[in-house]
Image (cartoon, rainbow, N blue to C red; front, side, top):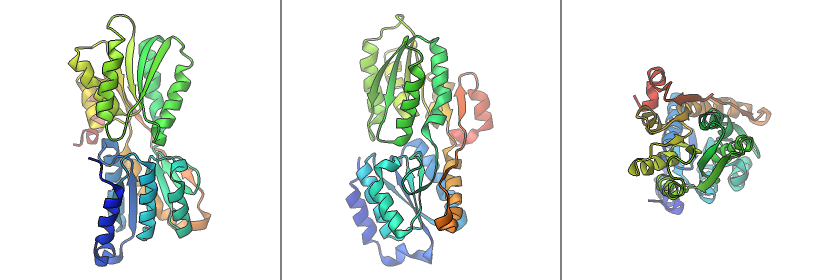
Length: 314
C-alpha cells in the first residue's frame, strides 16, 4: 500500500526533538524510489553499514516512484539538518526543487543511478553500463532475429538509460521486432505478468525466436509467472540487477541471464565517499564511482553463487 508522503512527514515532525538530535549524530537522508525492491534494499543496507561505521544516522523515505514525493523528501531532510542526502535513481533533472534546497543549505546530494548534473556531487549505479552485457547476450541468443517484449520504466534514470542503450543496440538488428510496455512502481510484478500474457497471445510457440527483457529483474520475474502458468518454455527471459529471485530463477531454468549489480558495495562506498565530499566542500569535483556488473547466465550461475553467496542473502 502506498503511504502518502505528507503522512510520513507529519510523523517525522511529531517526534520529540530529543529523538532527532540523539547523540548529535550526522543524519544521512536516503530517498528511495522503491524502498522494498531488492536492489534498493541492498543499497540501503550497504549505505547504513558505512554510516554506522562513521557514527552517522540513516533515515529512509520511500518516494514510491513519485518525483514530487522525492523533491519533498529531500526538502524535508534539509529542514531536519541532514548532513547529506542520497537520491536513489530519480534523475537529477526530476529533483530540481530538492537539489536547489540542498544547495542553498550547503547539503551535498549524491545519486544512485540518477546521473551527474545540477549540484549532484557524485553518482554510481549508472544504468547503461550494467545492462550492456545482458542486452548483448539477448541479441546473440536470438541469433539476430525474432521478437522481444521489453518491460520499461521511464521515471527512473537507471531504466531510462538502459532503455536508450537497448534501443541503440536493437536498432542494429532490424530483424528483431520489439514491443514495449512501461511498468509502474509500485505494481511492477503484476504489470510484468499482465503485459506478458497479452504479448504471448499474439506470439505463439514455434513461430519465431522469442524473448522478454526487463530493465530490471522484477518485471521480468513477473513475466516468468505468466510463462510458467501457460507452460511456455520457448521464451528466453533477461533481467538486470541480479537480485536473489533472479539468480534462483536462472538456477531453476526459468531465466536466461541477468547482470548482478553489487548494490551493497555501491551504497557502502557512496556513504564513505561523503566524508571526502563534505571535507572538500567548494573544491569538490563531481564524479562517477562505478562498481562493475557481473553477467550471470545458466552456464556461470553455480560458480557465481560460490563466488558471491551474499547474492542469495547468505
